Length: 359
Image 1 (cartoon, rainbow, N blue to C red):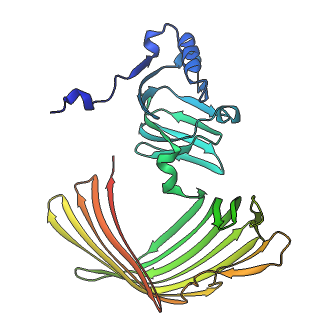
Image 2: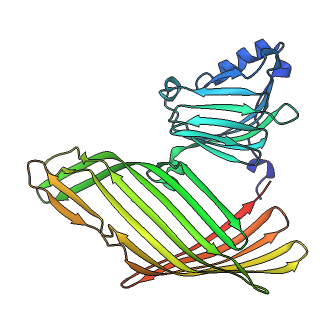
Image 3: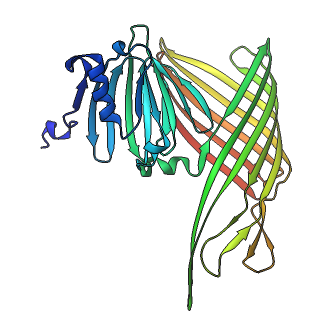
């Protein structure tokens, strides 16, 4: 039988300003402890500085629990150069933060989770709750544990808005994504071998608009809708590094638009006082126009350019979505959903489960 104590967390490393004399002395000690990660400054009067932290080292990962006054953390290019290749995952339990880094700014509130790439400079200003303190739970996780979840995607600035006037609903949105793509391939056959690499960037921009009209029946809500979306992909030119098999590609772009019209339906079942089951579904027809065949122009060093093409996007497809969501009290929702597209010679099916906990 396994001893219960063997599966517990290791003893944490503790830091508390209450045990270190004056606020100025405590701030100097705290800055020394965090010097390899970031610079720390007090937002307000130095004598207001206070912090209490518990730190657990879990192999290559680190778990922090902290309570503090208002602080600012600056992770500069000099800190990044020291080589901490981790993601920082922070849950704001009390208070909030303003974060700036990469291509924009964001504000976190209690219950929000913020994911920070520690290989990029950033600034975080921690804001306190009404009691004058902020509480954070933070994981520092090695990149290899999370990188596969994000692939080459870098950042997604987005805007969304909408309004409801009686049964009429209008929704508008836009998003732009930057990608950094890394290519590595190996060629090997009798008498020849080569390893080729390349790195380049791409950008995806999308805008969409939708109009629908909600019809509340006795037990079912119906919404006929029309959705228009435009998507543009721009890729930079690149040339592979390697030997005689290295390829180069010219910059390219692909612009595709979609019109989807159909019907949504939803109904609710009250199973108990705090348990509600919602069933929802969508049936629609999607038409694509513009660039529906992905193409690229490539060339070997000193050779003539040639074109390659990918699988075309179906110009017309049946769109099907269905889902069940069960609300358990005010805080927890469990759901499962199906999404599919059916076209001539092409089908796409997906099944997704989710758990939402609000706190």
